[in-house]
Image (tube, rainbow, N blue to C red; front, side):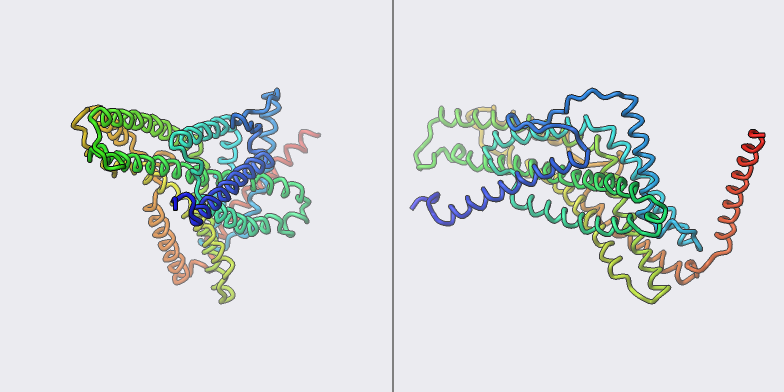
Length: 447
């Protein structure tokens, strides 16, 4: 019986087609969500598959004013996410936690401003991703470049983000500082923008994940191509008959042309990855910084809860694990993209028997030299290298933070400090003096 008529093969084809269908639905759903969150304003053409911006005439000044108003609202609402740390600090630990939360707010607003100004770059990157995806699919003749693993990882990331988002939205809609102050509408607007920010961070994860699968698909294709070249070395075809020198030379030239095409695709994919890292470096940096700092703040809350009530905040520990899971998934995708890009370097491209023609030697040498020159590394801001080693650095930083918290507890760092109170009193008195002077100036002018 033929292999392609076995029940196992038919079942495998059904599973692959089902997974491909779910993957397309997932990508279409993400496109609709990005449009609903006003992250991109474009249309998705089906044939050819392309993102085209909406043809609307925009007044630059009105757009500038609108963005300024949005940033002001975002700046006013976002600290509500860290309401527990915005209270008046009583000791050095509270003061340090307040500075941490303030830094997260500053980076969030900065990342939001950068993201709102880079819509055209994002559309260009999306179209380049679609183009390289179509080219790789046509070149490798693969109808299923994104396997079931892609669907599983995206679903896992979605639930992790949703899980953390529920906790943050509860903080945003705290009755004490939203409803009473009449800022419910602003809080809803801030929640809308915060959801957009979280969606952008998840899209950075997905872009790195898709890039890793593209590199893996190309590496697998080159590996299969080398296996198909074995008859050239053995001078026998698949039926065991001796191949003529002309047939061997013909096949060798065909595979050389195919390797040259692989080199072109690798160059385009390498340039696209660098463009993505350059255009979204602030978003990726904020994703790393936000998850890391929020995990530390949640651990700090656990310490405070244990010292005050002798209770372990299980929910806080779970949420800290949630932030670490976000961080680990992002770094693992970046590491997978880098490792898959170096896959051809581990293949025996330079030991293929080419005693009849030097064409393959030239193509293989050129391709390997290109890979050595490119040597993909995913860095943000020029010095943060994203890989699995960075996970160990973050874990060591968290352990050091825990030791510092224990040291603070042993030396009385969580007790009330008179020096911190004096500093806050001096600051509040300075602000009151400035306000009194302003009020007096206003009254004099009125007279």
